[in-house]
Image (cartoon, one colour):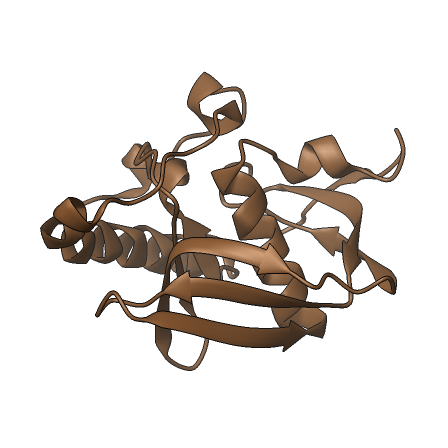
Length: 164
């Protein structure tokens, strides 16, 4: 069972590495990975008051896998982003790998995500607003990109105070 101690923190070189696709032969490993992602996200929610999704590389699982749980769990295996909107918006982004730091970033208003589900079936989902932003953040983790690298400028950082 994974815990916060397994979460990679800002500065860990693995957070800057692109991930490999999940292979069909690795399907038996996916439920365990998802369970670990769920457990760590639950701890972050409890301790810091945020957390809607987590990417596998944040636990050192260098695979293209995202776990999201807002109103129900959704697993994105080997996701691909398409049709990113021209319209963007700015927000203060947070990250479990540096939970007390907020970063001002610009994200696409809408996108389409293609992925495999837990049954290895292809899925397509059009996302807008906060879900679009969330999946862009998590997808960046799969590419070895942190929101600190997407800061709008050098003044786009602030500390979180408590459970904001």
